[in-house]
Image (cartoon, rainbow, N blue to C red; front, side, top):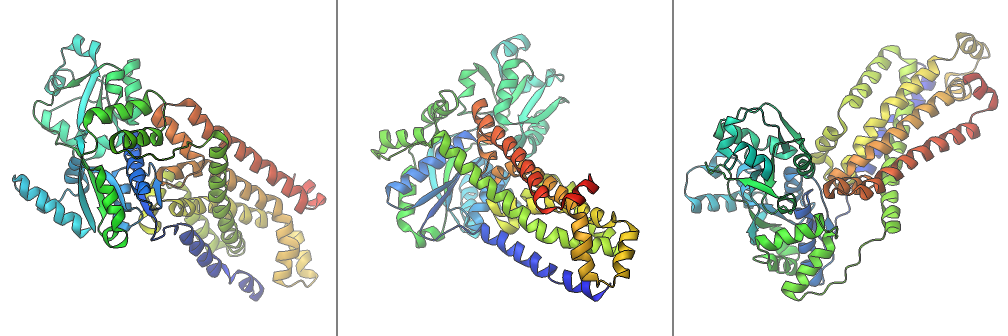
Amino acid sequence: MSHGLVTLTAPIPRLLALCILALLLSACTRTDDKVAIGSKRFTEGVVLGEVLSGLVADAGIPVRHRSALGGTRIVYNALVSGEIDAYVEYSGTLLHEVLADAELNAGSDAALTREGLLARLAEDGIRLGGSLGFENNFALGVTKPRAAELGLSRISDLVGHPNLRLRFGTEFMERADGWPGLQDAYGLRQRDVRGIEHELAYRALASGDADVTDLYTTDAEIAYYDLRTLHDDRNYFPHYQAWLLYRIDLEQRLPAAVTALKRSVGLIDASQMIRLNAAVKIDGRSEGEVASELLRDELGIDLDHNDEGLFARLLRNTLEHTILVGVSLTAAVLVAVPLGIVAAHRRRLGQLVLGIVGIAQTIPALALLVFMIPFFGIGAGPALVALFLYSLLPIVRNTHAGINGISTPLREAAEALGLPPAARLMRIELPLAMPTILTGIKTAAVINVGAATLGALIGAGGYGQPILTGIRLDDTALILEGAVPAALFALAISWLFERAEHAVVPRGIRARSG
């Protein structure tokens, strides 16, 4: 390789390091004087997160609710890493899913089990604040007509009906205290068993597309759809008390916040929790509104609660989505274009580069997001890194193809004129390859607009937030609130890149490339 090209591509490692540093800094939004409350990605978890946030706010402490962050392990790990300070977890989930190790669950003495639990939580820097006052247990449910038709009243009765269609929440399908253990405990032989979003499973039952699903016993849909809960006659499911968890270091950092959080202990019973869930899921009220009403009625806390209007939400989601797409795409361009140049001039190295970025493109987006959490935490960090990796292949490949597509006579003419390698690259190769390079960047940008919606699964915000909330609440308007702007955003980006090509690519080259 000539000295000129080596000089041009030497900054690539530094550019890559700067991009990674920028992505890391983007996730560092935590401040010590603010309490971060987390919640799982289901309605009850969000409501309880709003309750905890309201208690802290009433104590005059700045608080942020990182709402609907994801499944159990994502939220628990966020608590361990210090990205959140507190959230509500369930006893059975802690014992049988999060901390399911031999030492913790050895023996049958409940006191020892609790003692072991407290010690194990302390190892992770976590304190058990107490029970909020209710249980939300697992159960199986069917519609009452279907139960009467098949004579179903106990889980054991399912053994005699191997052809039933079972639709369970995706987390229930995999967790240790979910379907695998239930199947073994009861000897269930059903083969038509599939995972589905928990909220959608109720609709599947009502429409006749499913026969059995898993229930949370405080779900408002049980009464709304008039479902029969099957008796757990072998006592398979443990109890799931709603427990307050918080970080031990919060006691030293903001002791008043711990005092405020502990006001939630014993605050809610099961019937109240069902009503709160129904107010959101059935009546269409916001989680913040019903949480504020509970605090006012039970503790006399009167907080100002004003839900964001549609325009404010669109503005916020657009800003978050623009940052996700813009930062990741800029970093990708800075890295991918030089990589594409190197790949075009060094054939063996080029095959390796194209292979590596191609592998990154084949990893499922959701898996890549979750994989990045241990390194970058929750929020924008993992989303930015994942989008950056997804952007590399189209840009590298198009840069490589654009330069390799330049005709041999043109290359030979440039050499005959005595142009050094760097000058040939800047004056001949890049201008001629620019239409192809811009097409690759445009493709990466459009892909990023769609992929960025998944960032809401880990608290990155953007247009994915109303989409996921709409799915959870079965609200088509909310889904469209995210889907329509995302589609318009993608069209706008495509149009902008077409304008950019007209602005930066000479007319003769545009005509030649067309």
